[in-house]
Amino acid sequence: MALLIKSGTLVTAAETFKADILVDDECIVQIGADLPVPSDAEVVDASGKLVLPGGVDVHTHFGLPMAGTISSDDHFTGHRAAAFGGTTTAIDFVVHGPGALAANIDRWHAMADGIAAIDFGFHMNITRLDSQVEKEIPGLEQEGITSVKVFMAYPNMRLSDGDIFRVMRIAREHGLLTMLHAEGGDVINLLVPEALAAGHTTPLWHALTRPTWGAVEATLRGALLAAQAGASLYIVHMNAGGEVDQLEYARQHGVKVMGETCPQYLLFTQDNLRQPDGAKWVCSPPVRQASDNARLWEGISRGILQTVATDHCPFFYNGTQPIMFDGQLVAIPGKELGRDDFTKIPNGLPGVGDRLPVLWTTGVQSGKITPNQFVALTSTNPAIIHGLYPRKGTLAPGADADIVIWDADRSLTYGLEHAHHRTDYNLYEGMQLHGYPEKVFLRGHLIVENEHWLGHPGMGRYLHRKSGNPIL
Ligand code: URP
Ligand code: ZN
Ligand code: ZN
Image (tube, rainbow, N blue to C red; front, side):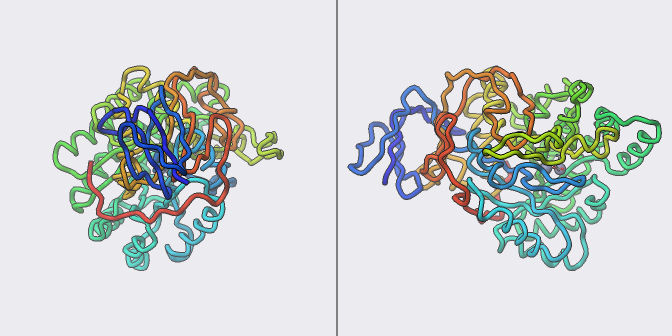
């Protein structure tokens, strides 16, 4: 059955205009004023509402094993939470475990395919490099994977600069995008045991042992490695003002480098880590200072950074205390594992469902970014950079009908119950939000209506992404 979304105000990355949207066979087929109503069409009245393309979150970790536990959303609960917040596409990272890359990808498909609830893709982590892995990287495109993530930190995952350069060269040859976790691994590896030996065990020390300057240096180092390899680079979870400076410098000098940040780096500081419940904010890289928040806001508003993702990687705050979730008691070991030792706190935060509502209020409502920039940062740019555009990331004939009807007038006090993440806390508990998704369509299927979930596990489709994507 066709669907006609009538009289909404469409917001794309480029323009804002009043129009109807006709959907058929899961795609947008026509956009225009006063479209005739087909006899078989369901009509949704969007007058007084904004109509946005579904959000594209290109940085999630569902079911990620870490620190003796696992991130607490799986590919269903995480996707459903994403949908409640207006996100209809997510890209997750395949862990580079033992065996061939293809075997690792199969493992991630086995976790996701049967339960996915929004459309999804994968990035491939490359955390060891030998001649066999080098041979396998070009085969990623066949799997629909056109991006690889490399790390400059984490003892068992980081690559040497030389190996990062080798990965970048292969990626360039095959039109793949290299993604970089930019932190100064050598210094972190010295500071962490020193802090513990000195008796510093609190969550704040997670940040103090991961210095900002290391992230700044790593960002420039990554950009310069990319320049030498002639590769395209995307720096994930940018967190420091100095990183924005380096990104701007590299881009001004013609380096093909782009940046992503996440709401936590725009909105939180080390003061949050000083709180009694500071473990809730432990993530890598860490949250920094107010001046870093401000420079990152400037970075997204001036187009120095291109995307806002989440790095969604939730854990329970107290995984010994079950919560009622989907009618069952659930408890998954979480942040309490590091009560006496910050190195044992699983790193990561919930956020996939928070991203759009929180960024709308703190970015658009506060006048830091326009509604069009909001769409560009959260949907269009990520779709272009990661090879999903124009199927995803826009409202246009031929695109998948991933559509959010956004009530810009809705005010609510936000928190755990709205977010739907499978965890026991929300970082934005009590925040006054203004603007919220009212209806969310995945390929024309209504999957969220206000507080009601109408989708089902398995309806999300795996996305084979394009290679050779543009640099924004
Ligand atoms: O703390 C975080 N961000 N955990 C996820 C892993 C990563 O580096 O993105
Ligand atoms: Zn990372
Ligand atoms: Zn991540």
